[in-house]
Length: 68
Length: 164
Image 1 (tube, one colour):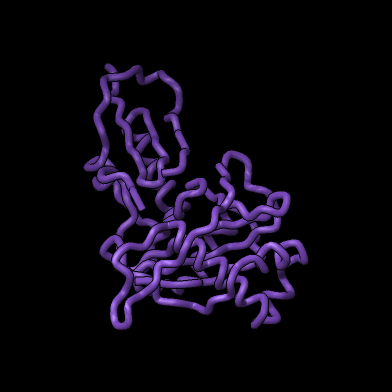
Image 2 (cartoon, each protein chain N blue to C red):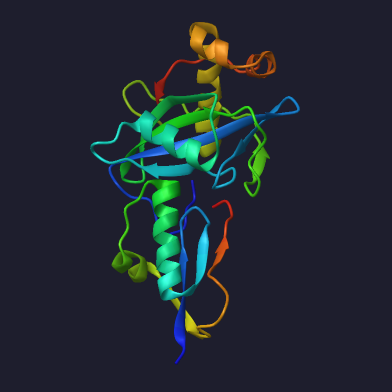
């Protein structure tokens, strides 16, 4: 069974792409550490873009940092 | 300032906008986790703005020379507190950096804020404020190198201001 891949994008340009659990964890950590934000899984998923049904054995979520 | 209209964005009634500045061969440059773009930090009701900015800067960028609030304005449905953070090391690995250009200031009307305030104008004022502190504040003067103070001497000193 494959897991759905999603993408979250911070307004600062940072992105995370991968399976939901990994992306949610990375996004909450980015918000906490860089922006002093307190986010929930539900908030992250509500803003996430669904990409496709990916390979659960695939690589860790990608993080793209770029100036907004 | 243009930001992504959708996605994970900074919110809240009070936000810090941080400009991390370093001196690169006599030229001031902007860097930080958002590159040269403003670095936004949420501030909670119980947060002290300076303490939060200092803590996060130390964690993400490294030890700063100075953390100083230089202006405030109304924007993004919030009160934005602008901070200039001076560092005495190069831009951290993986963080973009861009030379700072000069800009005209956004001037208030007699009883009203400027209609439009650009990021370059906020940075210009922040550096003019730092130039003012070099002349007025011995602690700031003691933290900055001769090269820093020489570079800042090109800026017209200005005190803390409400930009809008």
